[in-house]
Image (cartoon, rainbow, N blue to C red):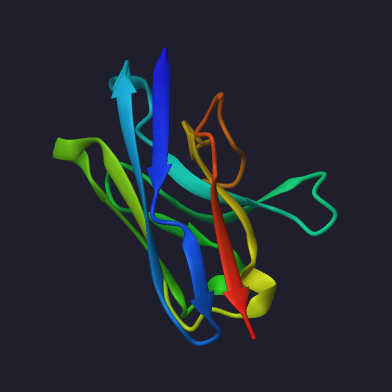
Length: 121
């Protein structure tokens, strides 16, 4: 079993920045590919925001390229999402996930509880 705990969400003005953190505990050796997903408009589906492999390979949604950066600290079993130039349309719940598939596109079995990000205009 793996537990994922996120932190770092909050309220920020448009153009501002936030940094999300996700720490894994439990059988962490099974989640070498981790990522962030967010609730899509309408709340029915989660869409990929960014993902990273244990070797540092990354994948980003087109909507966040150039603004968001995913990174990880393997020694701490942690993954981070630095979000810059935030827009009101980035407002939603962000969830940590692992292990993603090899292409870093599809979520795995483990989800964090989610953290709310709200961007005011």
